[in-house]
Image (tube, rainbow, N blue to C red; front, side, top):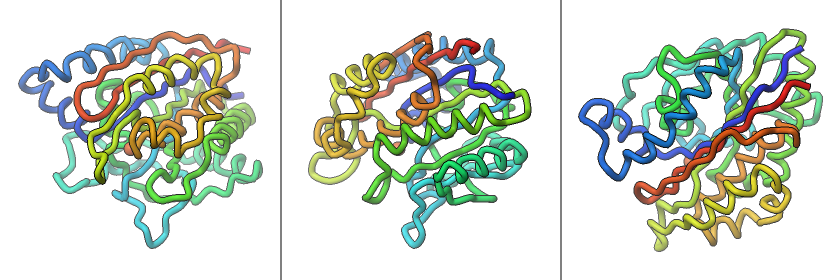
Length: 280
Ligand SMILES: [Fe+2]
């Protein structure tokens, strides 16, 4: 029987990825150095954890899905996932490996649990995953990835509680997997920021800290905050924080917080939290 061994919540931004590439070549800009330094302990934890499978709940930013058919919840089942070209060319990283046996098992289980996933047998992945992944692991990537995309681009979004329940269903799917995988669940969504409209550039570090502080022991309190309130307080893209509930929902209340870190390099709050899930 497979089981979840840990969870990570982490923010993403295109600039985070660009600054990583630049920093590894020429040294980090002082405003980005704290974020790079702050992710080092997560990288070491992940190296020691050695998961067999990594499930990542993220959101696409119109780099794979388009408005003509935008799924609310989609799952990628393929043996590899290409990097999306977001307009400035692909960065020098390999594709993400996938495991279709595990992917089909999780897909079947989620649909049986009434999550009607859009199943994608081809899926390219944008900065939602590629921007932070090199901070946490070196290529070749440490384990197959099962990507689950939640719509955070066009209203209506899946609600925070819906994403929490998706996490619960994911937990059941993994527990029902006859293989013996040790699974890491990662959720990624931007922390406070807004990159469009008259409020461009607003952010709210207090909101980010409040979220990081309460996700561990009091996620219900956070889930009671309407997504529109997250957007009002933290900028329109702060709604992506609700994706983090899918990771937290997949873990038990016995989880142990290993690490939490927040920095504010530019425009967007950058945060990460690491939980370990004790063996049952
Ligand atoms: Fe995003």
